[in-house]
Length: 419
Length: 169
Image (tube, rainbow over all chains, first blue to last red; front, side):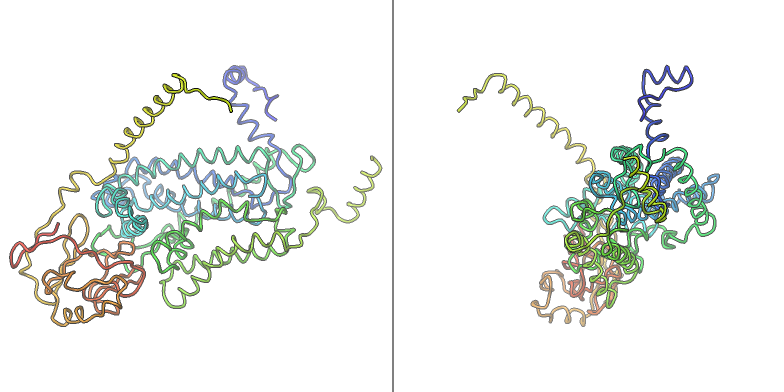
């Protein structure tokens, strides 16, 4: 697709002959053949790229004013909010940007689950995606520690203490992570360093993610294979560039709504109290996007068991392409999976709700059932469905399902005549 | 069976590789070890406390190695309660006499052994400490009785320098 591209200007040709960078960009962004029926759920890839770039740019400028030292961090964030020109805006974009980044990534993952985008031949795209998600979790968690408020400090304490559950070496590992005997300045400084590094690792993985995507091409709502360059595909530009742009503008309306009207809605008020190692807040709650995993952690009465289960909840995603034994991708043609996948989404939202409640009584019991169901979905339901489900017949092309019966007949007659 | 002869070249190849691996591993250690507690952190390893201002039934919290340490002058009722507990009922069985050198003074690290929160004093089902984070209940000897914490509150190394002063660490 990119071989016969020649830049129009002489300078462009001179450059491209020596380094075919323009070829590469051209091939992947302009004529790249894309299934013609992608719906708006497919626009979140572009939205996520925008989120990553936004976080990197706002993070870069915030780092020019922030001080990663336990005695100065809280004050430097207040300095950004009050004194730095537009500091309040930059910080609110960065803080809410993280939330919207997760909102978008959860939708992106849900789309993949619903339409079976993780299946052969796209397993590696999915697995790279799981690694991106892991890095996002680490980056967001470390970023939340940096303002050094009460939630930052106690969130860091609870999460780094998870490592103390490792048998034998647990205490040495936590002391090594802390650079001391408790959460303090050494930890804050190294978290800042890693928080700065990780988005660039994510960026590198995103390039691999897109590269791996462009080998088989996009999945689509019908979940069938389309021939690249056939009538079922359209060039990425202008069709999907325009569609992605429109979706991005709508997303930005929501983004701006958070930043300008309710910038602290998704945060926790306790984080405006400076970290105090002598006083634990009444309820330690992680950011909303970690709540389902937090609920899984708390549903186990054993410390090590809880940690293992929480890690498994994410790690199991990497094995999804092989746990799902059905060859049919799209839930549109899988009557049973279609119901179970919605049940799974509802269960994750339920876990998120439980993660924000106190872990006792009825909440704890429901939490345990929801945790069991989360794993049952992957270990029992998905492998079994492939064998017992009677899937609907797949269309031969992307056009077929949208044609009227008359059009379908005409098309069949035409192809019959030409044969 | 084909006879594989170990040549001089094989030997040099393997020894070179082994030296390179050992060199890389030893060079990696400084990069790992730099994250461990440094000399300035370790230098703060002991704290002396004057116990005179504390009356029975009162607790103070002091900082030791960046961690809170609870020092409680227990009332007779609390001591009795701690002593009469049947060890078989405890998830982490320890005698009260092993936890307090002098029964009147309970000195322990004020960090929940579950995930590191600071428990609240004289709260919970056992009238000892209660961790608000995930609901661990400790008794008047700081022993875990109910909830997710795996072990009793940690007792730091401390000595009574005289009747009214202790040194932690």
